[in-house]
Figure (cartoon, helix red, strand yellow):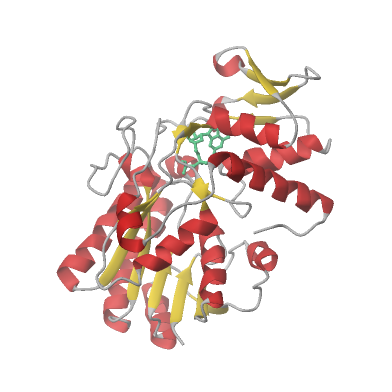
Length: 342
Ligand code: GDP
């Protein structure tokens, strides 16, 4: 029986990956950090109690070594992070401690306590920054535009360096935005879909967001964790992009999500005064606030996952419109007390 250790296992990707590995017969250990939330994800996935918790905080080297010595994992997946771009502008040091130096602690502990283990680092499309609308691939230059992206850049290159200099089996999955009903509510897709369902049910009047014109490559997280697992099953370690290759704006996501709940949204006004209005009732359902704008945003991100397709046999299946509909349906089900499809 293979053993996997997952940091951030109560987050969206950690929870989906836990389920996938349990289904594959792995013994799954979740790195448990005091104060972590997200138990609801394991509960909704029906795997509560099946992941073995092990105390591990990326801020503390000694407990990482202890955990690795205890578990002796075959595979380590690192999802633990301060993962909100906007918060990283206000908390750059904490972001670096966890996302950058935390990975150095983990890789160094691994070299000492579990040198044969395979390592997956959750790297990010945010590394690319705003470098135009061309599809990004594994050879595209990085131009990070937030403290979050800068911290992840360090982790990315350190992972490459441990592979090249220390002979560690270490992979970066350069993950484009991947969403699901298990996404944190701070991210724009889940924020919108929870609001759409509440508006539909009359529990909320409107939702307030930031930059409508940012464009992203949005895939379904459930499919992305399969790509991550595949990276660690190869004879040699490498870095891979996971993306759909399709790009859509926040504005399109909003319209599609409202439409999935049967509400046709029209845009009125300009700039900070722009509003999303229910075409039938004339009610304002969406407003803009500066509060949700970033000091520097990434305009457009779209990825080319042909390397993952060729080498890993990985291909995203769920399309943009279906993803928005899946997320809205899940929120309606939650409000109605029905089981969510995950
Ligand atoms: P990210 O791409 O990892 O930063 O994922 P997010 O879902 O947080 O943000 C995606 C894009 O949506 C960014 O360009 C944001 O500026 C934009 N956006 C617009 N309004 C909002 C909002 O209210 N919340 C968030 N999180 N993002 C927003």
